[in-house]
Image (tube, rainbow, N blue to C red; front, side, top):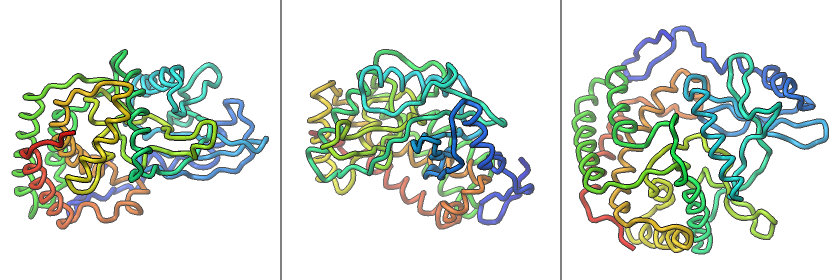
Amino acid sequence: MPRTKRSSGVFESETKHHAYEALTPDVVLDALSDLGLDVDGRMTALSSYENRVYQVMLDDNSSVVAKFYRPERWRDAQILEEHGFAAELMADEVPLVGPLTLQGQTLHHAHGFAFSVSPRRGGRMPELDDAEVLEWIGRFIARIHNVGGKQTFVERPALNVTTFAVESRDWLVENQIIPLDQQREWLTVCNQAIDIATHKFAAHPAQHIRLHGDCHPGNILWTPTDLPDGGPHFVDLDDARMGPAIQDLWMLLSGDRAQRTQQLSMLLDGYEQMRELHRNELVLIEPLRTLRLIHYSAWLARRQDDPAFAQHFSWFGSSDYWAGQTHLLVEQCEAMQEEPLYV
């Protein structure tokens, strides 16, 4: 798509069009109706920055959730690997809401969009200051990893320095995303951070398994424990990929070093009831955080032509933003060279 460069480093689309603009309510309802679902015309957009997700009401007053995948992000084979992993987890009674099989398939296509349909299940963010909740989540993630370790992804990418940091850095530079007044300083620090992370991963190799991949508190849904299926669950595996097990634990940690150590201890109390975590992976927490920082900037930049982008990420792309990212990467260079958390 043709784009013009602004002085802030943010791109504007010359045509002002994005694929999702064609995803009208009629397209969504017709797509579900063609699968044999008796939609009654009511639908609600659900929060999702990456895909377009809708709760759609049916004639019997039940509802389903339709997820229309971001065009050109995943190939069909990669989406089907996600669906296959979800099916394995559900077969092992791991609490996850996977796609329904409709007309013999979990992946469908309509008007140029790939989409899936799942049962509707709500929840809220877990209370991560509760030791019992953290221990429960630790067991939950270990159960996912027990299934994830049985096979490998073939189509989906791995989480490593190349895919998350090097490719993201190169894309940002090649597409002139970073304002000129910040580019040299950011690139210098980014290269230093990548070098340190590369050394840490080489010195502390870890087994790669199939992961959730984006296990932050907002992606874990919690339902009251007095319900039959109460506790934590996921609603999809959109970011699932191969990587070290600690990737699905570190994003649940927050606060100062003492707080993070205590939280990690409680998570591992639950995790190691179900699965061993090799302690050498603890060294990878800060390198993984560094990769995520670099990757996240590229993730945002790649989505600037999405009509929902300006609404949710209006702060992205300014010189102040990139100065802030440089500062964060300086801090990460220091953090990666400190002693890791130990429990």
